[in-house]
Image 1: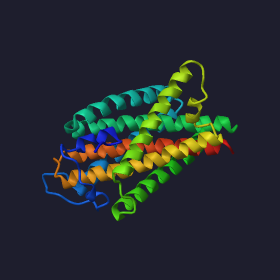
Image 2: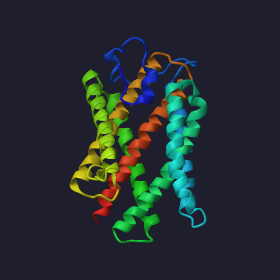
Image 3: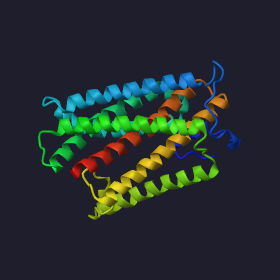
Length: 274
């Protein structure tokens, strides 16, 4: 079995996972191995660090005295997050030490990015000076929807409403591959002066195709969450080492950040049409 989320490949055992496990409730394991409680704790800590860093980042870039930090937070958070994310992905044992750093870097990026989106929407609707207010509204809505979708996907997995078998995984993996290929093509075209495709990523592009694209990406990200839950479930059942709880928290954070960004982007597009 191959994960659509690269960070979760550490959960893959040499043998093939039995599809009969799909959809089974998350189960507990021994005290020296990965457990539900430990995974929830690690995930909660990482989310807390990310949110705290995002709040601090937002407060800084929205202040006249520290507005210059917006670009460093955006670039530093993105590049730093990528570097630490790759290290953790290839060396899962480092997750318990590096995942908190990754969460903080993602928080810095999200705070600056969210503030930037708010200002972009305010400028688009002709409400200059209201960027903070608009941004705050969009952020709160995006956070609420992110956790609502996460809870819904967890319920669907645990209850067996969604059973991620081989076909399900193949479809989601193919969709992920398609998204990555589309982004690369769009980026290359933009480098040659053609912004037709890359424009669908703009938070202020409220066109029908752009909004539809965002909805599609959100659906795919939501389905990836189901696969995340399945791999974590398999990891617990396999009795993986205790440090994998932090790796699981890191992997979930990767998907949650992606989902939040896409929801925020969609809300911004819809707000830009008003």
